[in-house]
Length: 220
Image (cartoon, rainbow, N blue to C red; front, side):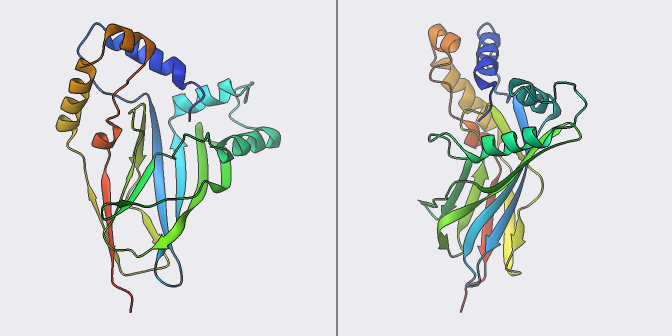
């Protein structure tokens, strides 16, 4: 959900046309996760903090007509407008967060308690998403990624746990070489018209993402 995405996608695809396809994201988002458990020990909500890279932050603010004097300070009205912008996601946007219990996908509600800020050159947005129904914390896995790999969500450490002290977290890094090969295969099936229009872009972002597993002790 980036105001300049269509422009960047066009430029990126044009750049890829005459050379070998190399997957690379165009914006970078440092991501902190907080797993919040309820009184019964079930996972009930996930807290998020997104912090964009400096360049993308600048472009987003420019696109929104903010920080026109370039002093790095937003007015209260601008901060409120950013908060409102990131509080209302387009219907097709899933938050680029994927939580599974075994083979089942766990549904989450939309963002609540959104707070936006611009600090030290970075756009920072924090929010919480409640699970539609809390789930027991066994056999849980999660990933944070943009399927198109336009954006890269870099996890800043293991998720923080709130409400329990008996959970183990393991993070498996992606096989980047295999992910790159998958991307090249997908790109090889595109026509020049596809490349020029941005149609049928490879949906391989998950292959480049960390996989986090969460296991907690069974509740009595």
